[in-house]
Amino acid sequence: MKHMLAAVLCAVLFQACLDTSVPKAPFAGDYLTDPSLGVKSGGVQVVPVVMEGDTFRIWTKRIGNNPKTRLLLLNGGPGCTHEYFECFESFLPAHGIEFIYYDQLGCGHSDNPMDTALWDLGRFVEEVEQVRRALKLDSSNFYLLGHSWGGILAMQYALTYPQHLRGLVISNMMSSCPDYGRYAQEVLGPQMDASVLAEVRAMESSGDYANPRYMELLMPNFYQQHICRIPLAEWPEPMTRSFDQTNQSLYVTMQGPSEFGIAGKLADWDVSSRLNEIAAPTLVIGATHDTMDPEHMRWMSEQMPNGTFHLCPNGSHMCMWDDQQVYMQGLIGFLAPGIAGRQR
Image 1 (cartoon, rainbow, N blue to C red):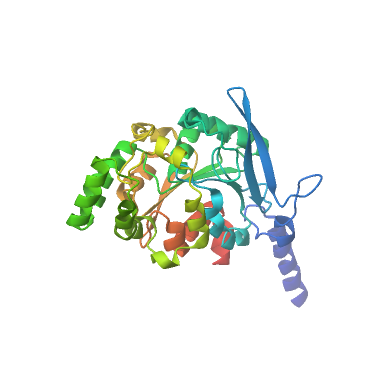
Image 2: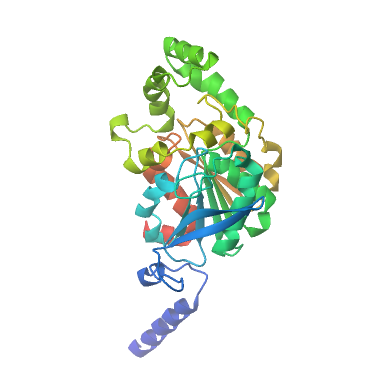
């Protein structure tokens, strides 16, 4: 009897080893292996991007090695840098998720041509496509995460090059800039003290955005409430480091100078009627206290054939920081559901 039980157990274990349908937990040796040839650069790869006859250097940095799950990060702003994503390093490697920092043209370590003609959504989409090809990302492994402005870029990329995506993450961005503007003006603005809102709007009406009083009012009354709800004195260093490096030319050209909606080149951008064309599995992440309407983002996920919605109830626009555990649980569950479920 003992011999029979032993034989059955061995057979079960052998079959389990052959079962490839269950994701395997990451092995640190594989994840930390650098597959690049030649001199090792710590995952940094500078990609030459050709635009209108000029070649620009675009900085990327890979964290980890997982040929099946590779996540390219599109930062917000427009004009911020990759640094505010550094909190991902505390979560994604444990689940074997490879992710790639990427400073868009005009941002961070990448070239800054200081040419406002290049601050154009269509051009940025083509830049992402050239970066994808250089990094050898394809439909078998390519996940794209766009946060804020990066979410606009990610949605536009998904509509232009759907054949290359394995999955998409839209983090804290609505599918309509006009709807975002209305939400900011009609919902978020009135939440501020009436006297503060009146003073802010007076400065905006006169174009007095450089007045130190403008940010003096917005920091506690808007940023603290809707950008990051961590006390201002404790804002995470990677986040403030990224904000401090914002390319203001890029930001103002595309976003406009006001925090209450979009007045730049993106003012009329709206793909709400095209969300049903995004067939790739898509996770939409929103937050209760976001600058973006969480109900609109929930609606977005319902328009996509394979969309799901994840709410960060205590978070704001930077909910990867101020509702961090909830944000990461949703993101990891989407990218590595089998492994994430076993490791919780």
